[in-house]
Every structure is written in C-alpha cells, then in structure tokens.
Length: 213
Figure 1 (cartoon, rainbow, N blue to C red):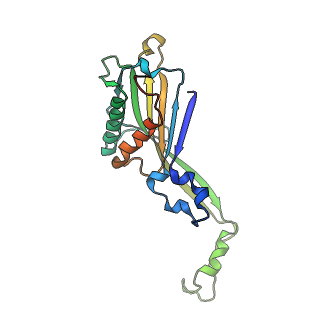
Figure 2 (figure 1 turned 180 degrees about the vertical axis):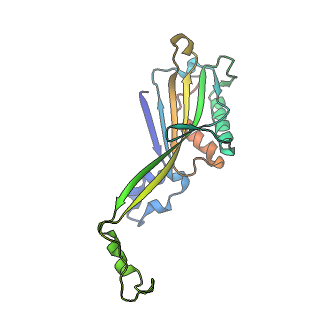
C-alpha cells in the first residue's frame, strides 16, 4: 500500500483553536467527533479494471489476535448494507462468490486489550485534605495510601476494518493482493445507526474507487 489518508473528527482538529474559549473541549466531543477514519490503497491499481465484487455475508471478529465466533448483530447487517450501497453508487455490480468477482470485500471487527500499571508515589497525598477525617469513623486520622501504592488498569479498544482484495488476478499469481483498506476507530462505531455515515466517510475519502477510473 502506497497511499494513506487519515481524517479525524472536526472537534479534534480544532482543539487548539478552541482551547482559549473552553477549559476542556475534549469533554464536549460527540461520538461523531471522536472517530478517526483511515484509508490506505495501492496506487498502482486501476479500480476501473474491475466491474464486479463479492462481499462476505457476515462480519468477522478478531479479539486479541484470535478469531472469535458470535451471533450476527443488527450493526453487522447495517455495515454490510452500507458497503453494498456505496459500491453500487461507484458502478460496481454485486455477484456471488462463485461468479468470478473481480474484487472481494471482508468486514472485520477488531478488539484489542491492553494492560498496564500506574504507580502513585505522591498522588494520594491529595486525599489528605479531600476526605473528611471522620468519614471512616476514626476522628483525627487522615486518609492516605502508602508511598508504594499502585493500580493495574485494562483498556479494551475496538476498530472496524473493511478490506478490499483483488480476486481477478489471484488465480494467475496464486496470491490474493489487498488493494484497499478502510479503518474506523472511536466511539459508537459498532452502533447500527452510525453504519451508513461511517462507511460513506471512508468512501468519500476514496474517490478513486470507481469503475470510471
């Protein structure tokens, strides 16, 4: 892949400009503003050479590097439908997997878990003045944590990936080549109501995906 394009929600882009007017503009961000759209494609590929495509009828789930089976959701169906709508608008015809499609499309939900440790060498001193010394029933005793206090945190993050591969030339080369990828990260990306807008944003970022190119 030789070209990468990233679009971030407008509120993120204008944080610097808004900082003088708001104490913390990030707290006022909507789910739409939090999303990041990343597209990547092979600039040597002429999408106009393809006229047909096939798409998986389900959304694959990869959790911490492993495939995961789960029941299909309304969001899955909405995302796949949105991809079909955008491909049709660009002039591509949907065909079955056995009808020699030129392009293949897979949709994947990617979930990753990260674990870390936070140390509190001085942070807890804040609570000496914050907590009521009588709250715990011991008058005159302050509330504190020892110097070596620490906490373990875990963050679970999700992303939506749409991959487009070249099936037309796969038979001759014995390999399947990726020609385009769209990735979405942020809040509410697995909400069915957001599917059409999100997928359209990726295609708007990729005007070269068209049969007239």
